[in-house]
Image 1: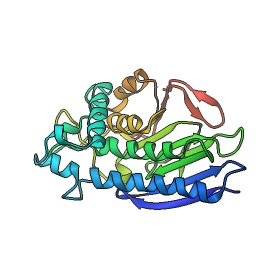
Image 2: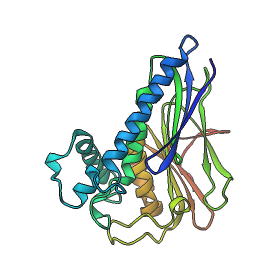
Image 3: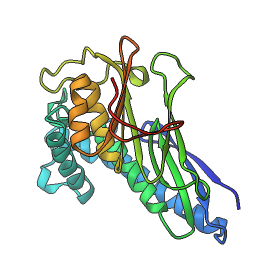
Image 4: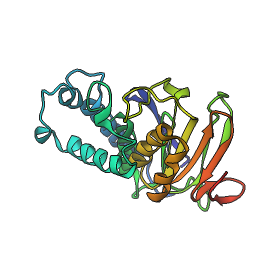
Amino acid sequence: MGALHRVEPVMGTVVSFDVRPRPDASASAVEALIDEACTGLHRADEVFSLWKPDSVASRLRRGELAEAACPPDMAEVIDRCRRARQATDGWFDPWAAPGGFDPTGLVKGWALQRAAAVLRGGPVAGAMVNGGGDIACLGEPEPGAPWLVGIQHPSAPGKVVRVLAVRDAAVATSGTYERGEHIYDPHSGVPVVASLLSATVVGADLALADAMATALFAAGDAGVDFVLRGGYSAFVVRRDGSRREAGSLPVVGGGARGQGA
């Protein structure tokens, strides 16, 4: 059986699934797991969407719901946000967002990572879950081969600036080219006057990679320090067009790259 694909509109984006079944797997078993993963994404959208006035996140943001009364998923995300704030030296801070608590910079990665976890093992040999450029990979697309993930050039749509070769890893990219001036400096509360065009973080968990990419974009080059301290890798494109690679970045055509200029 060949690869199975699914495209699911959810969480304000489109999530694509590329799933590679084991040779002895049945298509119905794999499809059922993809269904389960999609159900989880829609459930997360109902809880965390700030576009839905009755969502848990919207009610919490308006002060209508106490943190102690939140369901387990929200409690977990709040805890993850606190830990991400500490890990990024405060450059990721959902409590500093205009209008109140906004976990958007972490929750999409968290939901996509959970969707990928649903597919792990059993009839699935490998899978890639891609939500608007934030990607969780598990296993291999075929025996002995990594997943290839292209990083979009931030000022040249359709052009790939770097290709990564990943297994059981997450890739998150943040920048103004996707959604405009949406990233705020948590210290000043105003949109970042960015020194970077894009910031990509690679590591084990997409929730933390997502938060770190947001924080790195806000902090600029100085943010590479907290990315490396957390055991993750970074690739940034600066506003002047120069690039920097840091950590064990799994690039195609040269193995893992270390600290760049």
